[in-house]
Amino acid sequence: MRKASNNEIKLLRKLNRKKYREKEQRFVVEGERAVEQVVENGLVEVEMVFVVEGRAVSDQLSAFSVFVEEDVFDEVADTENPQGILAVCKMPEEIQPEKLANQSGIIVATDAIQDPGNMGTILRTAAWFGAKALIAGKGSVDIYHPKVVRSTAGATGSIPILTGDLEEVVVELENSGWQVMLLDGGDEAETLRSVQPTEKTILVVGNEGNGISEKLLNSGRKKVKIESAPGQEQVESLNAAVAVSIGLWALSDKVIK
Image (cartoon, rainbow, N blue to C red):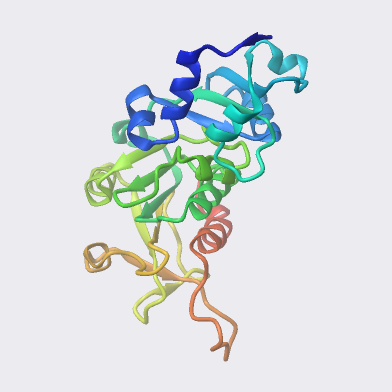
């Protein structure tokens, strides 16, 4: 295993910032299990694995590996207690709306989801239920933020991603037959148990504190809610990632894949 070059370490430092991730079209996966999983999945291209000097790696990872001193690794790592291994991967190309036009199933869309843990869990759950894509609307945290990537538990790259203005993307997809369902707890919303999704359904979840934007809520699109237990008044709302998980579980059997 050779020592990482200064240029390779310089690139690694840059990838902690979104603008450089976008410029280089690369992102970092940190942690032994997550790195092993992205290599096993083969869904994203792993370019290089950085390991702390003296740390053993599996034969599977050795072909990608270079070593760095521990103090350098601690500097570039995003975790408080780094495991001594991380990978630099290429970002997959984003899917375009026209590629989704003739598909069917469920698409998950996030309207300004800002918590990295929530976003990572949403992506992981969407992949588990076989969602066709995840749309990250403006105001949502970067899909390739290190904390988002860790929260996916190695599922980054498992479903197609599309980023952009959510209203514009949704309108384009509606023109090709996709139906939108907005997760909303208001009185006008239908219960999730009672709705019948079409074979092309987009499930939208809103910001952790403010919910779905007024523009989307006032658009005339279908609103759906997850009912609480009768008489339950102690808990005001569900976590965004939990709401998506329940929504996908409830809708997946009704939607023709």
